[in-house]
Image (cartoon, rainbow, N blue to C red; front, top):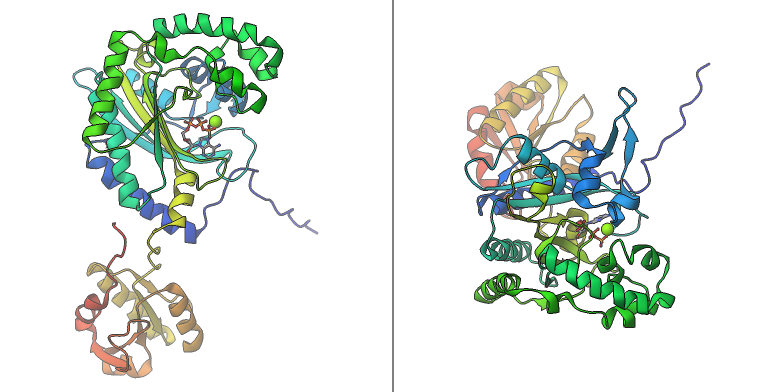
Length: 435
Ligand code: ATP
Ligand code: MG
């Protein structure tokens, strides 16, 4: 006797996206692709798995991600340590270097897909989540930083999202951060007694990150800490001003947040986040900034770059609270039929209607008309096409409008096969959403 297989659940923090939600995801992704292409970004895809050292080097040893969030394992074949990408940028840059992408010109590229972080699952925080990652590789000026922010504002507009605000900061250059860091460590040393465990541990390795604390007991200490903005040189200040001027040109409001440091080590100059109050504690829907040192750090010829990542789950959560359009029904036309001859004719007609651009489901299997109509209704189709014995004999199809009011009262209409597409097309639901 075979033993029943123990039912399995998905891994904690890793979500199934079921068909209802899947339609919404596709709708969102289609909008996003059009939006990215409207700024000249091209799709690029790097593997989900990379060598662990790409991330330890690229993201930084003393970051939340590398210290405790990575899914890493040893490849049993050769003993190499591999890691499921916890973010896109390191892999995108690795690929750009490996394939000499910046050889003759800078590149605007994007990717979307899952990333993996071993965090405590809660609303807006998952272990597999999705990002839209956008990178402008080889661009130095504040014009591209500002363009990215303006471009994000356009996406929020297109999605009808209004409650997202922009926070901005400049992290300056490494030398400026080094001088600030000395002053900061001196400040932390003075307040050593109130630092929590993370703070104690990081005060010498990543003192800037200590200020990013959520511990209320450390807020006053963080507020009175020396500010990086006081250590910025002329060029860094000019870069920031360049970004701000262009945001003003575009009418985009922002708040300077001197505490915004981002959780990855590779950033310099401009950093920004888009935040909302509508998602509870996990309110950051997008974060980005400049990373002029990363390409060189990962072995490439030095080149500046700037990028951002959108958290898709959080953004979709926000979108569904507002004006997100209804997801499209699974098909436009549902064909019901009787007997084998009816089914075969239905299959032929289905192909014909798809040629005309309609989305068609032909009922599969044989069942009574009543249950077929139930399925037709559940499919969301605008119209049912009926191929019963009478119809086959007369070489016509009966057309029954399932929801639109304009054809109401007209009951069923008999249409010769060759004219079916023409009769159905005008009733095809206009795509209520962009794609
Ligand atoms: P947080 O401070 O919320 O942990 P982060 O700074 O670690 O965010 P980034 O590395 O900047 O996040 O990633 C970009 C975006 O990805 C975030 O702004 C957020 O929208 C989303 N994101 C990050 N971590 C998660 C997660 N565990 N689950 C779902 N979305 C996430
Ligand atoms: Mg995080």
